[in-house]
Amino acid sequence: MKYSPLIACQAQRRKSATGSSWRMGETSIQVKGKWTYFYRAVDKFGKTLDFMLSEHRDEAAASAFFARTIKTNGWPEKVVIDKSGANLAGLQNINWLLLLLYGWFWLIEILQVKYLNNTIEQDHRFIKKLTRPMKGFKSFQSASATLDGIEVAHMIRKRQFSTSGQSAFQQFAALAA
Image (cartoon, rainbow, N blue to C red):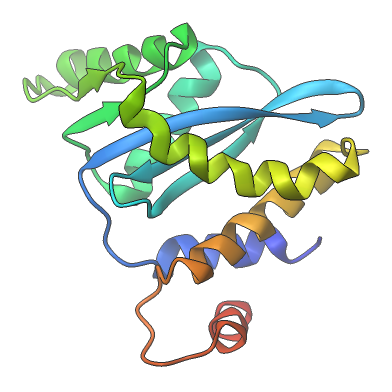
């Protein structure tokens, strides 16, 4: 639990390049009997871009997630989201910041198409499969660390790191070193 966030940070730095069309969604995780929200983004090929656990599902959390994802992965051309108003408001907030602060007229295209978001929804099942038997977490830090570890394991499984013939254990050991 202690080293999982550090390994996730290394994984973010070492992952291979991703596409410019993103799918973004969130899933709910129970922590101390309350629902928290695990934000995730993948590209159109299913490669994990970023993930973040938040106590709230609102514009501020969505904006923070998008800002963090853009910082580590660059600017997307378009983002596909579900019908969540918080995600839409967060993306519109990022677009307004682009326009007002930088005078950037190349805005992020926002799509709310249900079937295009199936990639991210199918990716959520691996997290649900592992967290559902736990029936929730005792603390926010343990939930965040556990989810970081699960995501890094899935990034290794999806072969997101540019490694030549290394086993999954060798890839994990390289991240931990």
